[in-house]
Amino acid sequence: MLTYRTGAAGSGRGARNMAEHLLQQTLSPEMACAAERNRKVA
Image 1 (cartoon, helix red, strand yellow):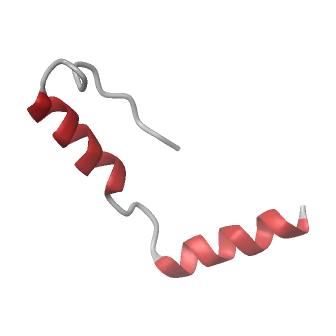
Image 2 (cartoon, rainbow, N blue to C red):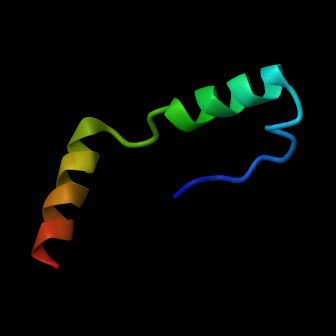
């Protein structure tokens, strides 16, 4: 799930901050693997 942040494209700094935000890991590797396994089964 992606979150929404306004003003990301308004400046170079904003775009950089948005890119950093989108690259943040929100799930542990174990949870990501479990989700991938469940997705293949469904």
